[in-house]
Length: 515
Image (cartoon, rainbow, N blue to C red; front, side, top):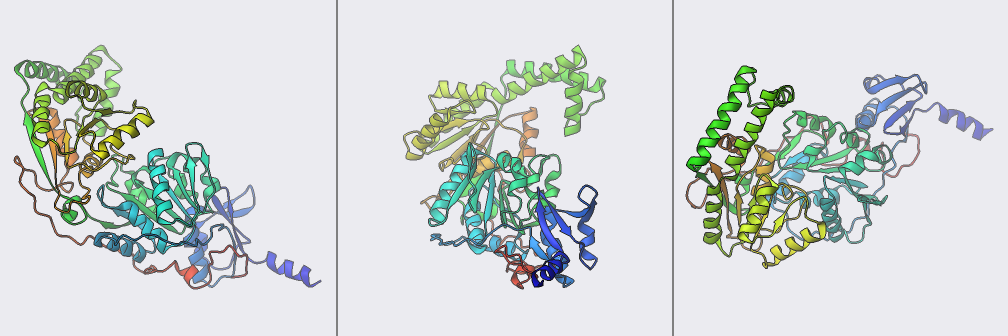
C-alpha cells in the first residue's frame, strides 16, 4: 500500500527527460518561467523544450523553488589526474577566468599558435565533467586525442569519426560525425568544446549545439566572423564572446615578434596588355548587365548571368584568365627565388591560391609540395622531414590553412590567396610559434601584383586588426601591449559551476531524486 501511494506521489512530480535531441517536461510544473521555453506537442500530449534551453529551464525551475525530477542528464563526473605542467601564459589565464565569470559559456578569440588547445585543457581540468570536443578535420581529431592522452593520462579518451565510434566520457569528434549522432550525444556531455567554432553555425553542424543539454560551452577560434553573417548565432549556440587578443598584442610574449612585408610586383608588358584587355571585356558585360562586383550578392549575380548567355560566359572566362595572370605572374617567381636565397637556411612556408602554382613551384625550385591530392602518409612524411630540418622549404595551397599540425617556421611567403581574413590569420600563425628561441623574429611576405584586383584582395584579407603595421623593409616591429578584453554577463555565476548545481538542486551524478 505504501509503495502504491509513493508511486502515485512520484507521478505528480514534474519530470524533465531527454528525448532525441529535445526535452519533455511532464506533468506541467507550477510557476510561469518555464512556459517561455515550452511548446505543446500534440503527438505525445506533453510539453516539449529545446535541449539547448536545458540550463535556462533548470535555473528557472530552481528560482521558482519548483520540485522536479531530472531524468534528462546522463553526464558524469570525471576523475581527472592532470599532468599539465606548463605554466599558462597570462592571456590563457585571463581567458579562462573570463570564461568562468561568464558562467562557463562563451567564445574565446585568439590567433593561431596562441595556445587555444592548452586553454581548452585548462577548462576541462577546472570543469571535471564528461566532455565532448568537436573539431573540423580528422587530422585535428587525432592531434587532440594525442594531446588529451598526454594531459590526462589516467582518463579514457575516445574518438568519434574516421570509423571510430567510442562512447568515452572524454570524447573527440569531427563536426560531421557529431552532427550525425547529435540526438544520441545530446544528454551525455556537460561540457562542449568547439574548436574552430566558426564551423558551427551551418544548417547541418548547429544541431550539435541545439540538440545538446550541456550547461557549459566553450568556443575557440582565431576568426569567428563568417561571410554569411551567421557568426552572430554563436551567441545562442555557445555564448557571447568573452575574451579576445590579436597577434599584435601577443607579439614578443606568447607569440614570436613578427612583421609583415608587402612586395609589389609589376606585370610584364605582355601580361599587362592581356590583363587590361580581359578586364575591359569583363567590365563591359558587367556594365551592360548592371552588375557591381565587390559584394557576395554581386558575385552571385555575375555567376548566374554567366550561365544565361554567351556574352556572360565570355566575361566570366575573361575574369578568370585575368585573375590567373595576377596570381601567377612570372615576376612573383623571381621574387620567390630572391627570398629563398636571402633566408636560407631558415625554415620557410610558401602559400599559393591554387594547386597548379604549387606544382609549378615544386618542379622549378625542387621544393616538396602538399595539396589535397597528397596521400596522408606522404603528407605526414613531408611534414616530419620539414620539422626535423631535412626540408628547409615547403609549398602548399589551402590544405595547410586549418586542421593540420604544421611545424614552426620563421618565414612565410604568400604568393597568392583569397580575400579571407581567416585564411590570412591562419597563414600568419604558421610563423608565430616562439619555439625554444625567445628572440625569434618571424616575417611574413605578401607578394602582390601591382595595379590588379589582387591589391583589393590583399586589403580585404588583412583587415585592420590582423597584423602589425606593414613595412617595405625588414625592420623589427615592436610588440603592442594588451591585457585582452573580459566580458562578464550580469547576474551569472562568477567562476563556479552553474547555480542550480552549486546550490545542490542540480547534481551531476544523474540521481533521480525529488529536488
